[in-house]
Image (cartoon, rainbow, N blue to C red; front, side, top):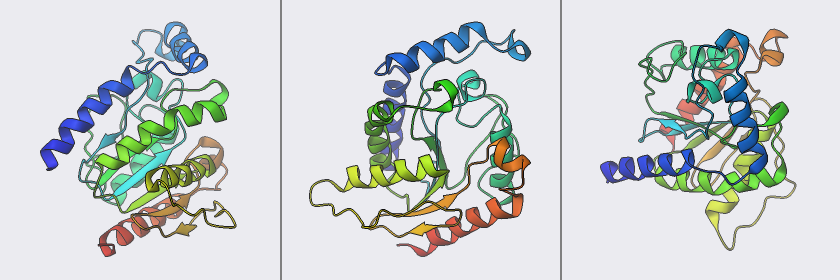
Length: 236
């Protein structure tokens, strides 16, 4: 069964990489890939949608907002090649989810153990702000991905946008008869929401704005990841 899931995840990856559903995002990601940032002028940008990646048997999913224009949109792997990713991968390394503390390229040997990294929106958006329509257009990719990641028990939501996306994802996966919680669960760092299949945990996004100002510190993100590991291990 596991090998079948891997094959289907690979097929889904191909489909995601070929997606052109959102004209504004297609135009932006390709413009960034053509014009490039001066520091990366000699590099060839990915310039396409980003699939999730990691351990197919993951019990923990890390859900971000969208690829960074000159980070993942350049490297071809979520959170790779920018300061947010540097902070996140260092935390994942300290807590035992990855085999190395940094990821700068698609082929740098990074391996995830028990974790999967993905995003609510698969293309880099202008000003890092996808529209509601673009968010909804990406939702089916997340639904398919989570259906194939059958061992997932915890979703770590990196920021309020990811928290909202995870709530929508849970609703879509539940199908007809799902009853929305009232009031709508609010995002917060360390907030938890138990679900029938998996729980959500909120974590401030590892953006430079949050990490440079001390809103998100290394002990804070480490505590969230350790809590996610514990919940994933306890949940049958």
